[in-house]
Image 1 (cartoon, rainbow, N blue to C red):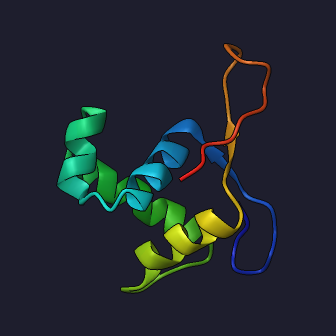
Image 2: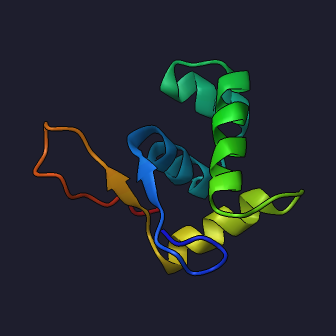
Length: 89
């Protein structure tokens, strides 16, 4: 995934999961239920993601979805995989 300046941004596994859930159109509460965390944690994580991508304001969610379709996020994976992966929306 790239930020608003076109720089490659690596996402954590959780951030990439949330991007995928945004692409499904889920609310913060629905994401929290699916991930087993509170909606406040979802909101905080997504606001951090928006800042990482150089986004803000009411349209940040829409922009993340559009950015994900254009350039799917590279995921920072642990040692359990060969170190490379992509989550597509």
